[in-house]
Structure formats: structure tokens, C-alpha cells
Image (cartoon, rainbow, N blue to C red; front, side, top):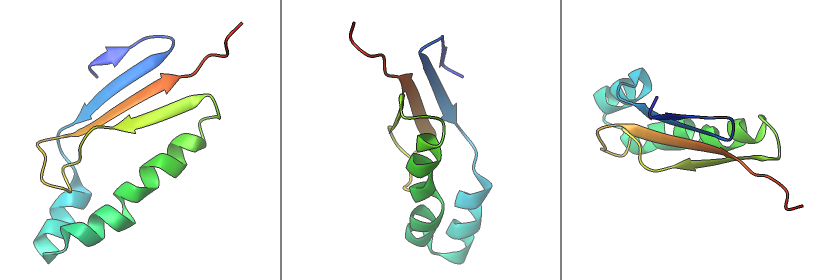
Length: 76
């Protein structure tokens, strides 16, 4: 956890068994399509006021997956 507040959360995931599995199969792109592509629809399930930004993924060769969640507030 790199950030945590009422309106934001930042998480860097440094290990992923899905990435390990698809890398062992020699199919990291397939893993990205099947596993990582579900991140944004899942975040939508948290509510319409939640925005997810994913900075990078282990599945695509990065050292970690960077998830940034932000609560969008309506302007008064």
C-alpha cells in the first residue's frame, strides 16, 4: 500500500501467480487479456464514483502492477 486516504488508494502488487503461470506457458499476452483486462470492469463494480488507473503490470514485464483508485467527487 503506497497511498491510503478517504478518496484514494495506491497499491503496488509485487507478485502475481497468474503472471507466473502464463509466463510458464509462454503466453503472457494471453494472461494479460484473460486476467488483467478484468481489472477495470471489477473496479466499476465498486461504484460509478471510483476511477481505476493501472500504471503497469507484471504480466507485461514490469516489476509490479500499479493500481491507483480514486473517488471522484461531484462539484458543488
